[in-house]
Amino acid sequence: MGSEIILETEDLTKEFAGFVAVNGVNLRVERGTIHALIGPNGAGKTTCFNLLTKFLSPTRGKIRYKGEDITAVKPADVARLGLVRSFQISAVFPHLSVLENVRIALQKKRGDSFDFWRSTNVLNGLNERAQALLNDVGLAPYAAWTAVELPYGRKRALEIATTLALDPEMLLLDEPTAGMGHEDIDRITKLIKTVAANRTVLMVEHNLSVVSNLSDKITVLTRGRVLAEGNYQTVSNNPEVREAYLGVGHA
Image (cartoon, rainbow, N blue to C red; front, side, top):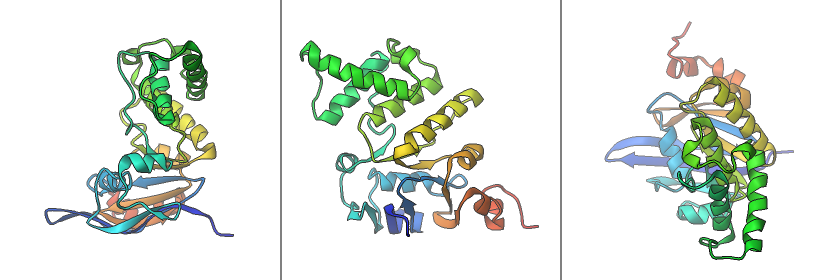
């Protein structure tokens, strides 16, 4: 039985004033998997991600989500379809509490603006859901903290919590462990495993240890093209990948 493809691209290409940043990429992400997009600096990973989340428009090619052509769909409308990029909502307000940040994201999912004037019952209802999300990401003890007081790794966890408040079916993570120490990396890696239990995750990630630990499938980009695909063992043993990504020449 074939696996269901939730997100796919066909000949996805992006040119900037004659420079081809993404060149004919055909990507297929299976539902319920963690799929990593890796490659050396300048490989086109970020541009590809920006195309998928509609922050850039492709020069040519198509993007399909759950079989629907979303190539011309706006970012906010794509998010409503259940395809959400972590940190794109930017619902982390530094001088509000951790709980209030998640509550604002829940209001956005519900279609409201701000509920500061609403009844206590409405706010308490949001508080319960917000607290549950904080439990999910390990931030329950920090609910009353001001967001700006959080250590870096915990702040990234809060950003993921605000994304989860939108109840995404597919989550796109852009460098989720960038700039973190070992303890925070371990914490965020476990968090990604948890949130991926009933979702699809596509992530751009430089840390190969994180990639090997999390990924069901890996797509390697170089110079805007797909160089290789497969599980970690397959791509890490590929001599072209070793040369392009790891700087290891052919034996």
